[in-house]
Length: 508
Image 1 (cartoon, rainbow, N blue to C red):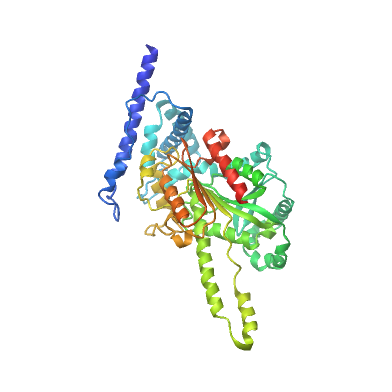
Image 2: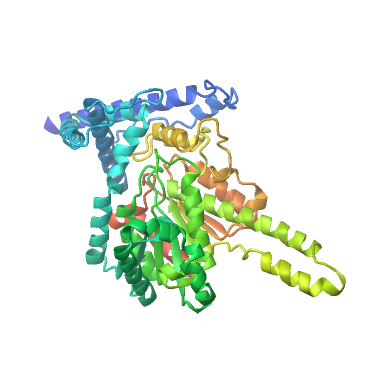
């Protein structure tokens, strides 16, 4: 009798959850075309409705191990979202997008309220409250829910732990182009170690003037050493852009697999701590990332790092995937401009006796050639910020990490109101074929339930049609932005990480 009651309760719970999911998807799909300026056709709603999975008659009391792991992640994220949302309501720090007055949550009471709410919803179940909070999420909610991993104390602790648990030879911070960056290496790198010591000594001597020194380096230290840039040893580099929806840096969860990459590829990892929302909107993050990249490839960062790039691969996850792809778009745009400048240069060559002297003078005025990365690797990238509804965004409405309500909040927060959301530097998905043709070899990782899967599929297809070496890998029963789960022992994520490591080795 007890087992019978347990089975009935499980069936009822599953039926209730399935009905809530279906209703959520129904509301999302039927809202197509209701917004101002919507370009959806009347028939789109009915086509997308067909994608909503029908519930079978069989009971889903028993799940596979991968499904159970997925449900565990879902339960954990629901508890987080429900607790943070309830805590914001209790501390009266919650705000909505149309509110004119925002009261910040108390730093003292917010952790206490979150812990109390977590205890409450862990008993009663968090799914309903989580769906309610996420459907009307705000900047305050996303910042508080995801911002914990971006706290300085958490970052510093994770860096210290990486030295002990992962045997990191180097796990430190430095500034490149005025932007704080974390540098990682699993093996000893004497040039980098020496440069870090020099950086620390300079910090101690002139702490109050550090930013001025770093930003003005082009006119002082870098010029004095520019002639010696070619003397620096070459080193493989991975420029990794962390996720976090532009509200946080998920560095703490990325460190284990980044150090594995460093060991497999004998490379140094550089992770920029780019400017975050809500204080810094587009294009602050992509501008900072571009400046860091330019400083590395030009050799200006050689004085800080102690080496110059040999092979350089750009990687990024989620929002970091947006920045990584946007960086490649920007570099390819510069490459196209460079080709036009070369044509103009050839047409500007003087004739007659002054030809040689005039050509030499024009060559000296030319900027260094644009360098395209040796590879691009993305995980669940946010390639399209336009909020256009796609089949995967309907099927992935209930993603544990990135529900549909958060996608809208991130997009509206990142881009200034009235801005064209199809700008390829904001939404790399809309880069034209002329730009995509110049892309480096690319690997895109996603999951079969990721709300952004269709963007990755279409982007990969366009790269292939443009003649780029590109491939797509989709893991089963994994949430959005799953790379970090490989370190937690999830076999699906570990398998993808093995393929990523092999791909990096092949392109280094």
